[in-house]
Image (cartoon, rainbow, N blue to C red; front, side, top):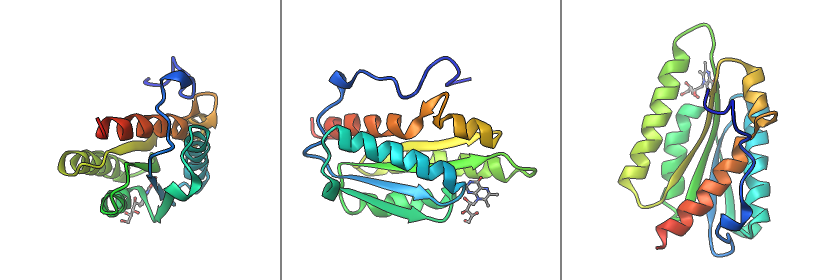
Length: 160
Ligand code: DLZ
């Protein structure tokens, strides 16, 4: 399992670029809102910790993870330095899970290929609510923290 052996929120802060010059947009899915709000808070706290001013952070809400693709495309059009797409897809009784996970991963990959604003993938794809909770502020850390670090690194890379 990808996160079973590492705590997502452990990182070397000395290797993180200062966020002071960057504008970061966060697109948040409202499905499984308890999880996505915790991920978003982890990302916001981390961006602030690394110097991104609050007026350079914009949060967009979308109904579900499928809509993260359009939301991130819309955010890209405002030319921020990076976008973070936050969602939580949890396996149900039908195959909906597979279609949403495939679509959002492919869609966000396509946005990274097509436009020069990096989009970071912060979509949890879990079998159970407990697994999602473990990765949004539980025993496996908060993947929103990791996404914020990735966004700062990608923002810096964009300007190299
Ligand atoms: C419909 C649906 C289902 C069943 N499950 C989830 C989920 O676990 N996580 C999530 O973010 N969204 C889910 N959705 C909603 C879809 O992402 C989308 O919002 C709708 O299909 C409308 O396009």
